[in-house]
Length: 184
Image (cartoon, rainbow, N blue to C red; front, side, top):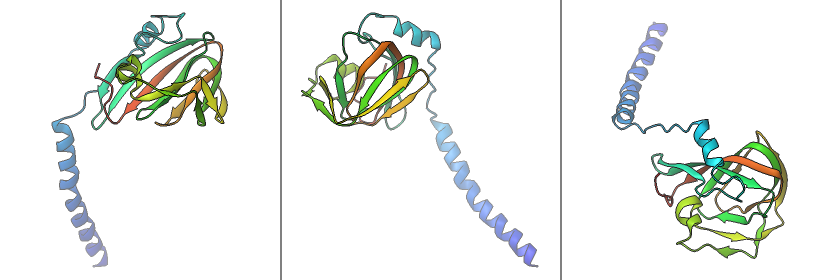
């Protein structure tokens, strides 16, 4: 009898959960987000657009609607000279995946000579949203990064490659909750 009551309780609980699961699957099936595929060839082509420049002309290969936020995928190549600028993005989180070579990445701390970027600047409108740039970072955390490493840089955290060994290439994923970056 106890076994029968336990089985009935389980079946009742399961039958109550089924419509909820089915409803969720139906709702998500009604309007599934499209997947975006970016090939290794696209990443390499974007890296090779300006191999001698400090940054690519258009580092974002794609910017997609991911539901409640936009996600940008890009690739960047940075040579050892000229020295790069320090930056902080007020609303956009970045994730770096180092593809080739190495460097010294400084995160946190305070921007030196920080200046807010113009809302009309290319960086704000097409690359990484509202933010500021500076000549360096004071009191940041210094890390050596190399091929294969991944770094998550939350919105509001200053970051800067203080030294690049030869050059560095990386994929960047930008999470844009305010949809500052236009879809591409």
